[in-house]
Image (tube, rainbow, N blue to C red; front, top):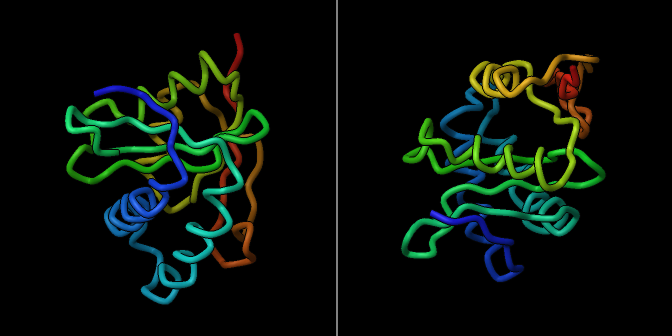
Length: 146
């Protein structure tokens, strides 16, 4: 496995990873929500961030993250690779090399919240709705500096 930048030609691979990961972890989203977000992810959200990925030995993306303005804007891993250190490797790179200090997480996504807390993030604020105005509370996290 190795870390790489995501090329624009790999956006559809990232969209597929996003969808599979969301279906495995975001059981609070409806099919309508997933279909609403898919074109936004592909056409607006992916192009708006710096994208990094982990690829397997066959050079296939198995996890990716998007970063902008010292913030992790997205982090998704193929479900077959959950709990194998892919997200941790991406986040460690973001913390050590990209100087990120914040991330947002859906309040209903318990596993992601626990993951970020283990990395030293703390809740600094809560929003009742997501950035699109949908009724999914967001926890705004900052990394603790001791």
